[in-house]
Amino acid sequence: MTTRTVSIIIVVALLAVVLIALLSTSDGSSGSEPSAAKAITWHRFDEGVALARQENKKILIDVYTDWCGWCKKMDKEVYANGEVGQTIASNFIAVKLDAESQKGASYGGTLMDEASVASALGATGYPTTVFLDPGAKPITKIAGYMEPKEFVNVLSFIGEDHYKTKSFGDYKASR
Image 1 (spheres, rainbow, N blue to C red):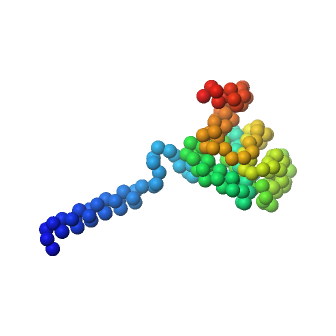
Image 2 (cartoon, rainbow, N blue to C red):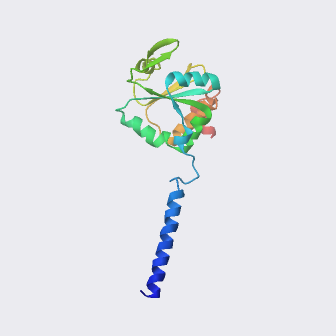
């Protein structure tokens, strides 16, 4: 082998080592946006209600079904968004509620299944996002999918108690 060939092999080998080192230390994120997967901790209904009372936080309930395409899109594009995840983690206890589940849950002191709780909360389409105060009293519900930016506005409006003093339209205009 010529000296030139050996030099090329060494350079290529060094570049490969550097590339492997960079790839093994990278977690795939840009570093500027926190990971929503780490930020959102989802709870079952009863557990979430108890925790909300204990921590004096509002409750965000994602009412979904397994077959709902928009629910899956909400999980993939909205709840996976770092800003959404951080806002939920800061202001809410997050609950996942399967609107077709027969798993036991209690609401208002009555033992029922998750499907009945979803119905009692007024969810008739999916996804529906229900907001409750720390005592599990309804604040509002939103039916359907929302883009992450608009959802952050809603989360801030409710999570920071702006809903108590102004309309959502006035809140958005003031931002």
